Length: 205
Image (cartoon, rainbow, N blue to C red; front, side, top):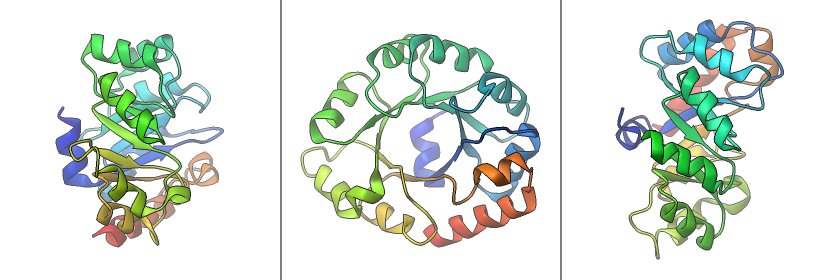
């Protein structure tokens, strides 16, 4: 799986973070059918490795694990079926494990120095967080010194503002609670999630 090619083609990925996810297979299938197949299950969700293992059965799903904080987290997620990893900030041990296992990793960063460090650690792409606080122009600014770094905009994005970050130079944007709200996931309100996913994708063109 070429994560950069998928991000460039899809331009969006979905973050799932909830106190409980009773139907990970149905949720994953709903997102794939809505046109949002790149999905990250955050490890802050209880029993996340099991959820990843179950969701991995869904055809067409490009499955990742997010909020990966340690080398053991990385191993658990990969063993469960995650095909890419994301971190909220710079996590050298996670990056080392991902590179060792040849699994794409998106490292979190905010400052120009952190972006450079993420690249040095072997990041496939760099997740800039919190994007909504930094603004779309910040992505254009980062591409001044780092024209070839693939940036993913994360944090506070929704159907109203996400397109501006793509226009600013992000390779992709994240759909979080605006699409898969914790309550919607916990209650398996899949039709509503599908509608929100379609609205998000329509908004980013």
